[in-house]
Image (cartoon, rainbow, N blue to C red; front, side):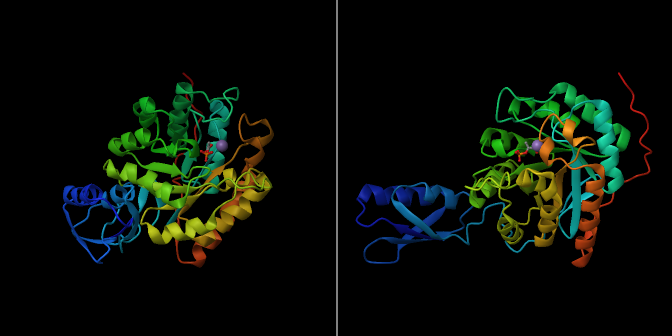
Amino acid sequence: MLLRLHPRLAPEQLQLVLETAAELGLHGTFEDANRSLMRLTGEPGPAARSRFADLAVVKAVLEFDDAPELHERQGRADLEVRIGEARFGGGHVAVAAGPCAVENLDRLVEVALAARNAGATLLRGGAYKPRTSPHSFQGLGERGLELLAEARAVTGLPVVTEVLDPRDIERVGAACDMFQVGARSMGNSALLSELGAFGKPVLLKRGIAATVREFLLAAEYVLLGGNEQVILCERGIRSFDTTTRNVLDLGAVAHLKRATHLPVVVDPSHAAGRSDLVRPLARAGIAVGADGLLVETHPLPHLALSDGSQAISEAEFQGLMADVEALVGLDGRTLSKPDTSRAGATPVRG
Ligand code: PEP
Ligand code: MN
């Protein structure tokens, strides 16, 4: 590891660097007469890069290849995350679909069956909704979790749903197969650490103005808690242009597939903000190497309680899935298929 230090440091400032090195089990030696380039020997752990970058006397961490963070690929094969029939990564592609928010049982089961019949292997749907305005529909909360559990029982589709508050982790965890951490919560390190300890897979969405490094460090919180099952979700970032709701950062997807072993999925719905652009963005996401998609679908998009303008209908979703299947086949990957043996019986009403 190599550090560039600010020139003409006072002895106590140099001492701070050496002490930090010692604390991390490293030994520092100067490479130059000006004492501005320090080489660290020893076995730097994942904390080294961030610890040194935090010190005001360190101008830059120049080489850190020998201090891998947990999210770094480091020559590893793709991590494959399996949730029911859905397999993300390692040459497997899976699609999660469903409404932005859980609205009522009939609609949820209808959308889940349509998603499953078109090839989705996970049901998405928010019970706790992170809305920009506190006046907007905030989701059904606990009732929404019950409806998700019922839709799962009827369709056999595992569920991914958002957790907003660390106090809800147990409750949401009992109803879901994968936690979603939304864009607005990406920087909530307390939530991420708790999810690291809980142990269920986590779908982590990129913050609306987060750099790729910040995104990866958010994943690092979950990994550091001992949970390896993290899926990264690119859902578009904010730009000066409002033609689309966000700008889908396909370059970041291509980069992430190289930089990390974690699966990467694309959410074309929140990137587009418009139903007519969801299919082409989904195609682009798979073509650039994404291991899956998260898509908002609704039987009656014009009646949806949230994000209706980006929801696609059953027929549109079928078209999207046909594209995904063709693209996945082109590069020798496999599209996860739902277990359709469960008929989709009438839900039991309580
Ligand atoms: C969602 O998936 O409905 C959602 C709120 O997404 P994001 O956190 O990406 O805005
Ligand atoms: Mn939404």
